[in-house]
Amino acid sequence: MTDFYLNVGDSVTLEREVSEAVVNAFAEVSGDHSPNHVDEAAMSASAYEGRIAHGALIIAFMSTCSTMIVERVPDVRATETPVSLGYDRIRFLKPVFIGDTVRLRYAVREIDTERRRARSEISVTNQNDETVCIGEHILKWVS
Image (cartoon, rainbow, N blue to C red; front, side, top):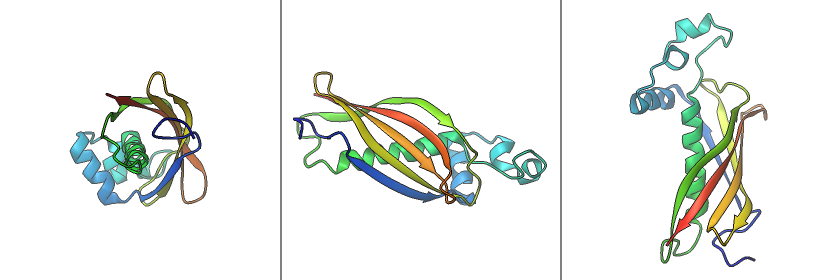
C-alpha cells in the first residue's frame, strides 16, 4: 500500500455497445458530422465498408473509466480533488464500427506521490478481442 488514493495495479473495466444512437448522439454533442460517422452510403463505398465511431467517443469512454476508478476511493474529495491532466499516446489501431461492443481496461501503472499524480494505461478491445485503441491517462490530485 502507498500513502496515496490509488495503488499500482488498481484497475476498472467498462463495456459499451457502440450503437447507431450513441454515435449519432455524439455527433450532435460534438458537432462532428463527418461522413465517416454519419453517412452510411458514403462509408459503405469506402475501404471501411461502413460507418466508424468517432475517436473522441472512445476517449470519452476512457474518461468514464477514470471517473469509475476515482469514485471507488472513500471520501475522495475530502482533502484533494482529482482532475484529468490529459491523455497521452492515444493510438487508434483498428476502426470501431457501429454495432461493435468495446471493452476498456484502465489500469494504474505508476504513482507519483510527490507530484500527486497517477498514470494509467488504457486498452480498448472489440467483441473479437482485437485491440482497437491504446493510451495513457494522467490524474492529478489538487489540494
